[in-house]
Length: 64
Image (tube, rainbow, N blue to C red; front, side, top):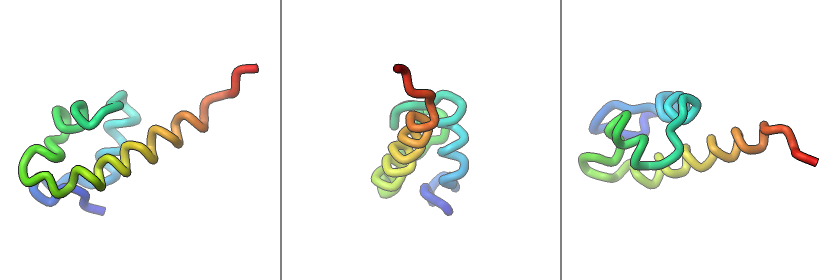
């Protein structure tokens, strides 16, 4: 699904950037330009970011 129409960025591209180390909106903006033009994609981008970071955190082994 396209998240940022201005720059043609999809949720898959955002998730890939997160998988490769991006952890903040600023990092996603620097890498993919999301939120750097009209800003309408910021809320959706943050949702994708938070969801993916949660998935990554939940996949980590529990420390006893």
